[in-house]
Length: 118
Length: 113
Image (cartoon, rainbow over all chains, first blue to last red; front, side, top):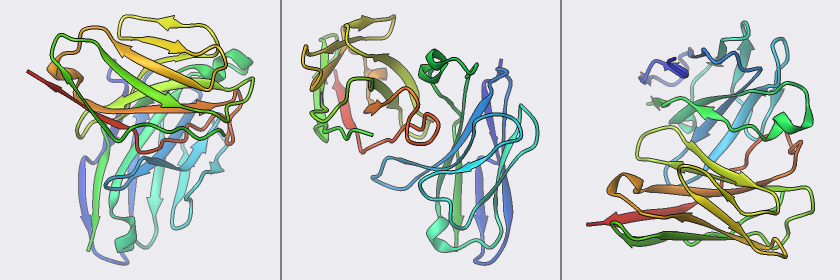
């Protein structure tokens, strides 16, 4: 099992360009998340998808859109990149069955996409 | 979600136990304590979580005080590979955003030879 796979690993964009960060998981997890991490800070939630077909905003959604393409894939799109979006982006997945106990299941993270916007 | 307070950094000698404290004095009755770590340039890795009782797994032990206002993560025999940032997170069973984990700045643990 590859776990959570993110592509690309590195990306440089110019201000105003668009791009999509890809995330795929092979653990049959229902929930998926996108976080960003800036230097010296913890992770901040951008968007999440509790199950296939649903998405919701997290703490810092402005400037981003997401698509839960199917159960495996959850993509993050920057329509018009800005220097403030320079960050490391992490995707995570979680097994959630709908039972309350499953909300405590651990998140599994990918190894990140390092994005620089100039 | 309750906030947590952790020391920004700690050192530990290789082979010794690493005890990482976390204060969560505003924790409510149904909130869990989670620990994750992040080794340089990698995604966060789940370590352990608990509600009231002490927990142990193959990676670590979690000791939660009786009043639940603080906890300690114990790595029994720290190795150089345990050098990482350790995050203590408190979250209710449903979370503020469908189970969202709110990461603070964590404790940077440096294991030294």
